[in-house]
Amino acid sequence: MSIAGKGNGKRLGRYRWPLFQGILPLDRAQILPNLMAGLTLAALNIPQAMGYTKIAGTPVITGLYTLLLPVAAFAVFGASRYLVVAADSATAAILAVGISPLAAASSPKYVALASMVALLAAGFLLLARLLRLGFLSDFLSRTVLIGFLTGVGFQVGISVLGEMLGIPVTSKTSVGQLGAVLGNLGKLHWPTLAVSVGVVVVIFASPRLVPRLPGALLAVVATIGLSAALDFASYGIDVLGPVAGGLPRISFPEVSWSDVNALLPIAGACFVMIVAQSSVTARAYATRHHQTLDENRDLLGLCAADTAAALSGTFVVNGSPTQTAMVETSGGSSQIAHLATAATVALVLLFLTGPLKFLPICVLGAIVFVVAVRLVDVKGLRTLLRNSPKEFNLAVVTAVAVVFIGVEHGILLALVWSMLQHVRHGYRPNTAVIMRDPVEHWRMDPVVPGKMIEPGVVMYWFGADLYYANANHFVEQANSLVKDAASPVRWLVVDAGAITDIDFSAGRALLELHQDLAKQGVALALARVSTGLRADLDQQELTGVIGANRIFSSRKHCLAAVCPPEAEGRAAQKG
Image (cartoon, rainbow, N blue to C red; front, top):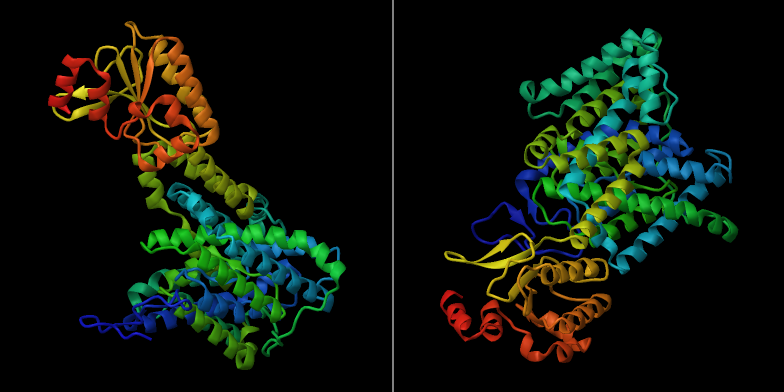
């Protein structure tokens, strides 16, 4: 490994290895904070991961297994410094719905089927990596990310209210959960509420009182101790109860080929959720911390994590926004924290499962509630409202979708909406009529017939690549500038500075425009044609039809060629 160069004694491993990209370069000053963050994440995630097994329908111990080899595998093969890949409620729910008709919950066959789903999902992830499909996350705008994380914050906060208040909640939807809590406030369990409030106070107060110790870790250790000493269970406070220990046995899931065929659709649904949720979360934190995102490397890391999950006898794992927020708020800044989490879970599995039985369930709810509050991006929403009200509305709609129709559907909506935004910008791009300016030489005016850069010459700027979806719009505006002009137009010059390529459909539309203009006695010329666009014109045999002498690399040369002698002199002086 390369040692840091002169002037930077704190960093090790300056160049990027094919492995450990979420760790290197190593900052010595951040090792201890990341170890502490990993310990905190383990303390927070151990009971949460066991809770996810209730959703997935697998034995409690399999929840701890998701925090062992899968976490370590992503730390080795992934690239994101923040993304936590472990058990997640969305994929756990998809898994349970698909497998429950095939085997009894928590049975050996059920666990084998769950592990095979993880292995099949890993295969889909590997295929996505080979096809380099990581670019799909580039379609997620910052606006959508703000709305998504805000929605997740509300959704997660609502989901733990019942645990914090000691009110039984059976609904799987945020609306149902909130309704159950509000409708049963008379059944509020005061001792449970007291513990929850105490945990929230400790977490918020600890940065000032004990800044070097994570408040959430203090809360977990303290409540386990108090619960054991005071017997919280006798006061009606729900605790986890006995938890089995031991490391997982590495083996291949034993299922039949007919089972594999039945599991493919379930694995496909999990794959979509993994890619969508993981990419959203990884991009959100890369953007927040001004880091470069390597989506394709993360696909490989996710593949490795789900392979590790399958071979260690647990269920599918996913990039989790909640757990990623946990490690970030605990001071984690690289996958060192996640390796520390895996090491801590291994020690717990071997030696420390006993004390976990005293942990009050409401403590987990209170910790997750604090994380949820921090996920709500009030600052980002406020900035959007001030600078771009339309995008603020988009962020709010995304957040509402996450809360009301679920994280998985909210993610898909966010992806589709972001892509539609991109398509809309290309489908109806900005356009203008180029005019002369005495100071700047050129200016862009609204597209209004009658505006000419020189007598009889209209210069039309189109602000996007020409393709099948916007070609008709291009032709309609170009024709309007000619037909609706008050005085005759002799030349229509298309400023192609923003057009880098042109597909076959748009090429035919350009050819038809040239023919229609010729019938009206109007010549077509192209200005600011790039090398790439010229190659497309040549390949589609448009250069010969339009005329090589009517295709120019600059506005100045174009006007000098199409204007009469007196205008040519003015063009040379002003251009």
